Image 1 (cartoon, helix red, strand yellow):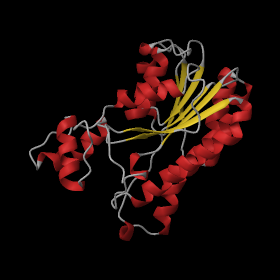
Image 2 (cartoon, helix red, strand yellow):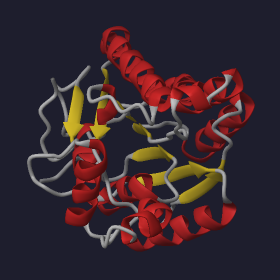
Image 3 (cartoon, one colour):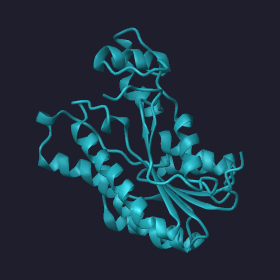
Image 4 (cartoon, one colour):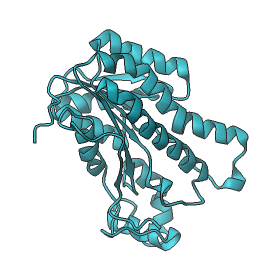
Length: 267
């Protein structure tokens, strides 16, 4: 399927690794010029090479602190200087987690700054370029925990629920501009950082943190939240649906919250 991305421009925040990089790679392979934004220069440099190999010779990594409003504005100014317009914005940034009793006001504020306000600020900074383009799409990444609660990630989930609400609301106001905006809610996804952070914990139970079936077994055993397919997901499975929603090919989906979680019974 031709997604109509050839020659278009795209920004992926948090695009230097994990799901963000998988999304950026997919957009690059479809012919888009891609800019990725993140804090770490080494990871951005590696992402640039990956994206150029995937089909985006003009790919660029931009150092942006997504907790800092001025840094976000500066990052999108680089895109404006480079391309002048923007077709696709994909916002993938996510904060940390913690139990309610463990988190003070400073940690709550930090979680919302990264989980919600980074998205608000990125969309606001991108809108002039999106409005200048022939067509424009926005995709935010939330989380399936906004529908399937987990006490371990109370602030994270609240910030992602707020981002999902902002996304839905913006579909109303941006429709007049022809800008489509949707929210993707990933389930448990086996990224490199997920495996690295949890490999010892799963290994203690005789499980492999890089194996999607083992990961879902651990999720079920510890949180009683299995999925119908019986395995965790992969970054490329988030990337495929996100790339479609961020593409010209998507002409009629807006204001949607799309679960990509292997099937879950939300009750």
